[in-house]
Length: 534
Image (tube, rainbow, N blue to C red; front, side, top):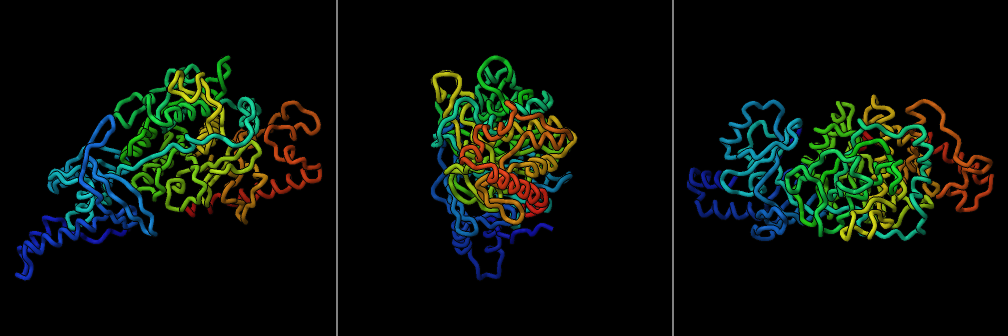
């Protein structure tokens, strides 16, 4: 049974209690008590007590859809603070099948705005009395809480950031799509090229839907910022090319004589515009995941996170896990997140640590960790940075052409892995999302600079470098074709091969191969424990 927060009297209840008491209290005392409550605002988020300091009055924001927002400072257990804003709305989680929900909420002075993810009971609401989302959340977690309300939190507006948008790779630039060479993607494509029934959703800054290497691959998407079905990027915003570059790495039109290849050549794409220059409510990310659920997405690629590291709001965690558990006709969607580029440890209550998330870090062309990639127990896999990708046409992009070779960060590693995930879903559509996570982790190559623990995990490299050929071999049950070029030592000449770049001799290479086998065996024993710690 979920532990409920302690009852807190609303302002009106405090006043009534003071007037109806034993004569010791007075309306003036109630006002003082109410003032203390205002200074000590709080809400419960998944068992976490979040103290809230109001920093000023509400004012209209500067976004294309301005709304009155009041600045607040959130104080989480452990000392972390996050700057945010609250508007008029809150998010409630109600018990499934609460038939009297509408009438009971109305009687409590609550107006239903719209459903967010009704399959798990998430609704957006506002206070009929004119209070903001923080007032309402605190009231619904106190004495006025209807019995069927599990949780209520303010619909916080927080800044999101696209991981890696400002990053310029500091390693030597290799021509063309060296990252696909490093992953032996041509061999992988010889075995599977994806399927048009496999839909991959890119949640990001929006996309250039008319790009010559993307237009033929795009299905209808969503703009959760402007609340319409046009996820086109917004000209003039920072990191405007970010979503387009992610989409190109995943599934650019391939074998068409134009531009670049995509990781999953036959897969389809949908874009969701979630990120711009303004703080966005947490309900917007729930909307994005609900869209992925409704369109039956197979893979959801997320190269973004909170600008200020913070615990993931429980409603966002619940939405991701719903997608992982029930998406793709009950088989579950594969939800990939970039690790982030802050060169720090990810804590166990953050977005990347959610049970349904596969977290992807970044390595360079030498298969060493990049200088920026985040680390921690939540890192599942690493992938090479996809430095060359599609770019918005014209002056809005990063390059005068339709392509950029300046993409990078874990933002580019995540969609590289998402394309591989699309290949696996297409090759083994009967497998669950959890089973395919297991396959990707069990077949990963040991990173040459990793120092794995007894469970096969390294805090920087996770369980190794994603290996599409080995993963497809497992799900298809056959043997991979020989390495392109053939001949003795051909494998040592692959771009990014650690043994070639370090000049290792044959004995050293055998040692590396043995270490890799040990790492894979350890990884095979590990997956259950990893999901349990989440």
